[in-house]
Image: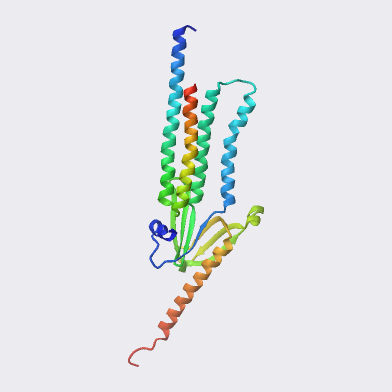
Length: 74
Length: 189
């Protein structure tokens, strides 16, 4: 494999992981919106809802950061 | 707080008193969450087995692991949402059955206390007996007779007693009214 083919393959590989990261973030945002909407629209207890929202978002952010960091290392 | 939120979400009348808010037992929630966790750990077991034969770059593995864990995390909260929003609200006038089947599938039905005819409590299985949960089936009267069923609630016997107590009060009150109407002397005789 010459240097040009190698660069092209790396770029294609990079685009794939970028797309994967973007897809995950979009899915996360949409799905989280749906979940949080359900909690606040139908829940009977605001305290439980707030607590669950904080817990959910806190650990989700850890996963998102891990995704971004690992993407940067690829 | 709960009363005001209930009023907002299911339109509880001003003079309506909430007797109980019933959910499925926590054991059911734990079982469902464990199912998700077990399915979530399967790829890791597979990777541990296959990983000894092939080698993959660490960054890619970390990316895929994070993505998978995020999906499992969202699934856990979906299970919790379906559990948390699936409730029965027993008031002194009616029973409101909010059936949260899944996200975007939610049935809300109401049964007036006067229409309650019979209540059946069922406890099946080892864990149900151990933790004291079971099914509650409310038989309704009238031309469109049917039944309302809530599965795996904690202490269904107590809820049955609360409903029957209220049904007795309503029936007694109605009988007294009918008796007074029958016994009322007619004017001019």
